[in-house]
Length: 534
Image 1: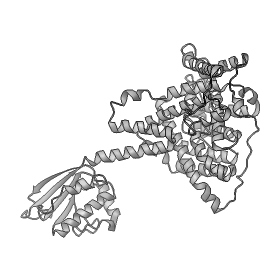
Image 2: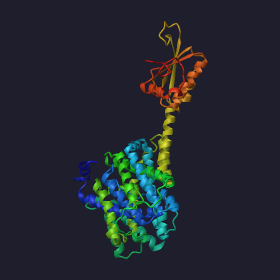
Image 3: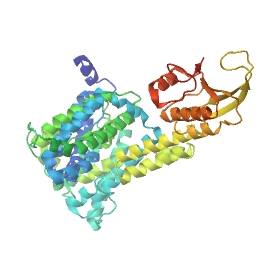
Image 4: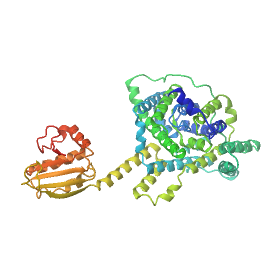
């Protein structure tokens, strides 16, 4: 990316002043620390491994990614994939897998595969957002449990729903509930009175001051894990550079790369809709790939876009790259200098912020439109939401896209229609003494419509000369070619001649490319083996 382009995107204006961007970045970093620590434990690595990833991935993607204001870091969607690799082979294999993951993402960007995010239908997007909002919300519920650190970590999303909690009671529950509610009230209603400071940051600062000032008995970030450390250092993963190692890490890297890009590109689309601007999906693929390669060499667990932190950034007024860069640098500052202060922040304040994020993320309008959209779209929306909650984002999106594609194919399979009539002129342009049967095809011919297509022909009743007119149709795939081939063979066996007319150039190209796969032998045509009468 040219330096001038980068500087122009980093530059802020009156809509997003520098003060607002800096405060938004600080707010995001405060909310990200406990989440990242939790995801590090889910993956089975030390907290600093997650924090280093949050710093490196967050910094590189914020500076060079395809979407200003989008926040990336160590995400739970990746942590659940990593845990098996770490448990069986150790953290060094994880670093190697993250480097390979980044390489695969770079290839996706270089081959411009990011554009395929357009194939995700809107109901899948709504289901993804709603499911993730539910996951974010329920993941925080374990904070109200008495299990201490392990109880909270067990409730992080993709690890559990947060509902199976040994609930606190008495004053402890009242304190946590009160602090969470206070945080939510400040976060939600402060912007009505002032926007001088992000409401999330004001809520965290207020609740922290109350907790420390009145020595309230409630869990803090320091009770989860210590975050003090030094600068990340460059290290080549200490694994054998053998084919066996490659075969071990490749399946994990492929899944990590796919999950990371899906979550990042869907988050990019969501921010596009909120800001009514357009991000660059392929550029985001390149930035995610480069970030994960670097973090793998510097002892980080890898990462991708984080929708919760992105929403906090957006709600706090972050709109440029500066807020994302600030967030990453603040995380590094916490590690190096400010860990004693950050560790005193009550986790209840961060839970309250995440509750507001979940409520703002959920598409409440989906309840209103669900009865107005086609039943298939409503089913996909609900299905993706449920699968996101029960499994993970990547599976949910894949299921949603597959179901949507099948629904689309089924609908279009019923659109094919064939009209039959007689033509008093022969197909070869002779004196017209022979009569022809003409079938006019309407609608696409593909795997879903071939059965209906073949059922429309009455070979015994047709004249010896048969014309199939494709002026209002297209042959879309190999199944369509096979249908034509089978039809031609049936007419040939009956001693009759079949001609294809008005094939579009792309259909002719498809037939030509098929070559010997379509042995129709309708007439001796040296190029297509079928007659194409204009």
